[in-house]
View (cartoon, rainbow, N blue to C red):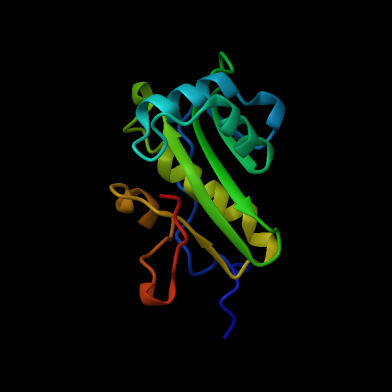
Length: 155
């Protein structure tokens, strides 16, 4: 049995995007200054991240933005680091505090999942301290054998 993510029939359906919002992977639409503010000032995993480092991360990644349809203002962000063949790491997922509670985080995670599905990736991973329920609704689950995974961390 293949474990590649090409068949979405066993995964939860994409939650419906609330009216008035749209998702895009167009890099020209990203509000890099807003993304940096969100992450460097309000995201526990990226507090203090320099703007230059955030800009490099954006440039080297597949980026997803959620936007208010009427104004075009960005209200959420997700970044994917991937080789486009076997592996992807979903990171820097952030929903502006003013629009939290509308399901945008779950819709965004599911949109990333569905966007990557045609690539036939073996796995998409992420790390979270506090949003397991958000990602579970999009089909993510804890690692079956986390003891196999290792990390090289900067001290």
